[in-house]
Length: 190
Image (cartoon, rainbow, N blue to C red; front, side, top):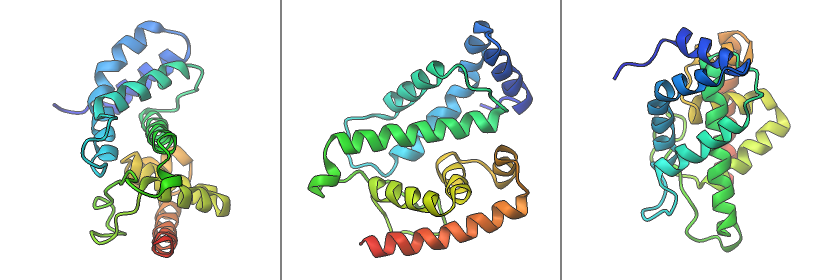
């Protein structure tokens, strides 16, 4: 299945923002597959038998997206950036509600093999990664956003530049800095 045109999704998002409920009905089938792929990235590294399934993650994120109808959607990249952030929050909330952080065992893991900056021997838990991203955000909010959009949102460097309204060169510098910073932080957490 080919991806819908970014312009088509953007137009529907803007129509939805202005109150066109029919636009929401039209956009759902256009973005569902990509939302599912995004959720699969999140769930790929979770332990087997995880009670939260990929489809449930997509559905929960979708419900939250529908509830935030007052968002002034910029474009398709903005939509998927918000979607990625929502999925991340859902999984973190789920992990914390299960007490994984307190007990230290059976921590939900996320595979970072897709991110060339960490490699196979490094597989940080989701809560530790979230904590590291929060620490990075305290240091530099934009660099944290770049990581979230690239890794969790699956956006290209060009799309990140558009969402954050910065140059692609700035995105590349932020990504390079953030990768090294997170490597150090997650390495020290072990």
